[in-house]
Length: 314
Image 1: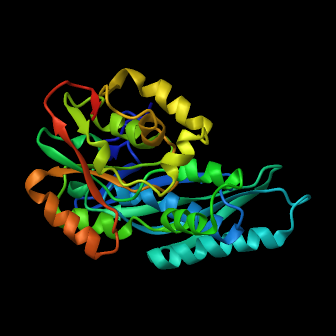
Image 2 (image 1 turned 180 degrees about the horizontal axis):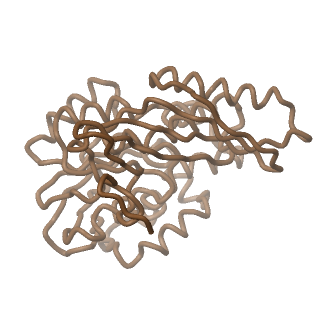
């Protein structure tokens, strides 16, 4: 593997995106993400996919500036109007983020997929990594959990129109303002909660840090009816893969309800930021997040000196 003294974050220290220093006061953040449709409306799918791709830059405290479309489209079996709506949704979200679309690439594929390659900028000394958690830190989650479960319920025809609208709008919401506020306040670590679920991504934050995490389930924001759907068995397959992968790191208190693992391991699409910051700054950031529209942002736990490498769920 090639090495470079200007590489701040690469494959040897996996994070939400790669970071490369260009000058003493400028670094670029690079990321790419695309997936198959998770909602029926192509315009909404475009918005969600774009917000999801931009999120990795926000998680590292950066400002995305350019993007390139990535498209796999079944041109022989699907009307081109579907692709137009997907791209329109993506462009509208990029405009909201003040990001310029500079190109892209498309291929014919039997399965529709869409996403973006994104480049952002940041000062090299202000990069926010996953692994900066410190004992005594508080943990803030900026969006509710349960998108995977709600989307499974949508596919089963069991979610109401209001629930569909709510989960779509949350997934399409940018983490832009939350990222800006955490940089203003000053935080130790951050990641965005996506396909590995809350506990999967929390595990990444502490796996090499020599600290542990305690999470209070009563404080976690959760989509309405997600618990009910989980209890009915409307759980995506990725939940079980996430649980199996991180099982050795997680300890559940004996009185934790049976549905809790399904919610905490639920794979999220365009989820919120999980932020670790000094406890004395927590109320200040939480207040600013609420004022900025992140109404469900909550303090969900804390960082402990022990047990090292473990996540305790209470």
